[in-house]
Length: 231
Image 1 (tube, rainbow, N blue to C red):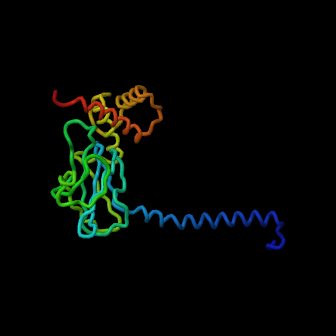
Image 2: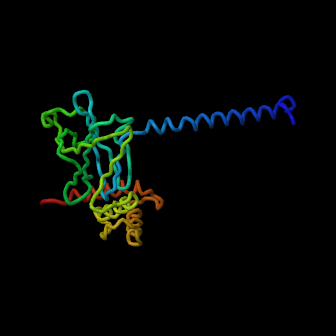
Image 3: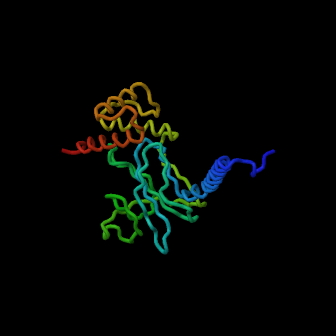
């Protein structure tokens, strides 16, 4: 068989480049678990038909640090707190988007911590929320036992993530005034027709993703909800 010495220079160069590429690919593959580990943390999943804004709290020195708001469209999961987590008691609170009609919806508990209701925030919860221009909300204690953790927001219906996304689209189509109907988590012909009507109304492309569609519907529902109330 031919040894290294009998290969032409160009063949040696090509062999070297292929070998080098293989080494780089192998090193990249070996690095993937490290990147995955860096993404560990507190994952929140929205298995409801509502858009949820979540805030989380964790021990920081002698106090509790609170971060918000992580926006969770129906049927999605996101990391609300980067890892690795320190096992122990953490705190969780969720509120429904202002685009939803019928009053505010909350997911929480009895442990009061301060939040900024007006926008994103990261703060150490003070003893007097109002004195700092903040708002007290009831958080639910969560006993986290590992460096990576996951919690679900749910409602009475036991939605899968896919069904939750579909139900969320149906709810927003109703609240945006596009079409009313059952919120059952299944996209039928009537719902698809309503989605197409909305896309045409807003001049949006037919291949708009569900994530973008939910954002557009939330804006439309929020604008419409401002006219609902007392006069």
